[in-house]
Amino acid sequence: MNILMMYTSMPHTTGAYLEKALRGVANVKTCGPTIADWTLRAWDLEGIADRVIPHDIELREGTIHEIKRGLEGFRPDWLLFVESGVWFEMPILSDPTLPKACYLIDTHLQAADHLQIASRFDVVFLAQKAYVDIFRERLGKPVFWLPLACDPEIHRPHDVPEVFDVAICTSPEKTDRRSRRLARLGIRYSVGVRRLFFDDMARFLSSSRLLFNSAVKDDLNMRVFESLAIGKCLLTDSVPGLADLFVPDEDLVVYEDADLVDRVRFLLDHPEVANRIGAQGRKKVLESHTYRHRALSIVRTLSDGTSVKTQGEDNAAHSYV
Image 1: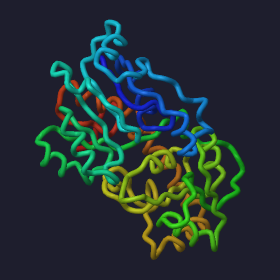
Image 2: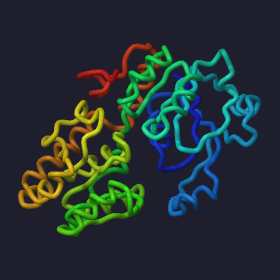
Image 3: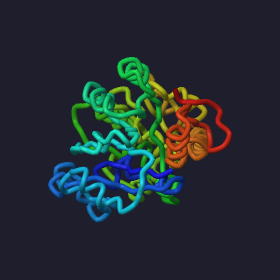
């Protein structure tokens, strides 16, 4: 399959991880703008500026003619747009001869905008399960749940000393629910909070006995899959879709505010339990939830239009619908 993939080039986004995986299972040409220097500064991403790589077709004018010149004989079977948080004009969507799919990530934050965007595509993939039925009903077209994932080459254990009881990689905030939960834990335990990416993130998370996640708005975020791939026991809140993919107290630990502190205490007091859950969680994501799995799901779906396979590359246990 030939895929023309469009997203704003940023190295830490779903689009970048998915591009890498898609190149292993399809013929891919990428197209789109490159994140601006001022955006890197505004988002505190200057530390990964050296990883920014322009697309095969770097959009400057944003015209159809610019894209067609850049294709240089490449004939895409599908256009795949992946949300990256920075929007840009895509006149190529008006081309009636090119089938179009999109993968929308942060629908929990901008559902109305995403519904409007999705209306311009033939096939829609959503990272957040809670919106699949709504979009399918409103749009009257194929809408699939395609959860986020991990990249095992980056999200992996590092052999470093454990210096924290609990750790998370996130932007430091002072008023959101995640920060309040971390503050509660910090009263009793050693809590590590850093804004890191790639190997630095994996190394930092490996230095903690337990890992922590707290959703922004009931979203099944990248952190769940990336943390599980580190191989440490993950504590996370319950969100739509989580129980479809992972077994609580087997692959990870699900907490509520009322029992968060007690659950951390139990796991720290029983490292054999935490280690067992951490190992099983890593096994689960490597078997079923890498970006290669997602890339294969996309190719299968766009090839036959039936279902998105989820549990492994060959023997699927169930389908995201």
